[in-house]
Image 1 (cartoon, rainbow, N blue to C red):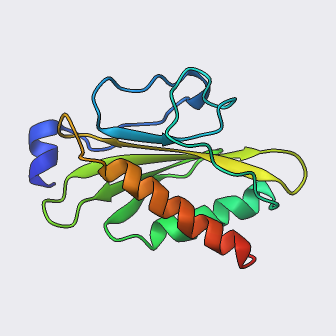
Image 2 (image 1 turned 90 degrees about the vertical axis):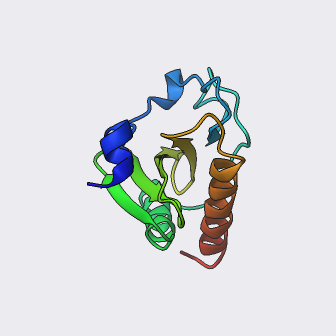
Length: 145
């Protein structure tokens, strides 16, 4: 157990119900989501719809996430996958929720929500993380996965 867990509790902030999600009032989260999948939340950006099947997109996202420093998988049951990402220097924990959204045969998009357990602000860390992940996902899709 690390010091942050002792002080703040379990760093896993749990699953997210994207259709009912309401963003935090504190500036320490980021959301990339199709507006129709997150109708109650202000999104930072909408993701593209890619010409890949949902399961293939899930494997691409998994490969990208697992390749990120300080990232471990917390739960990958069902449509949603949850990761714990720790900052490099101080090991602050953030939870990243990923929901794959099918858009018909061989078409899919996703919802990404990253939120900090500790601190009132994250100084844009969660948003930069999601933008980086999205760019890596787009590159893998463009290369065929």
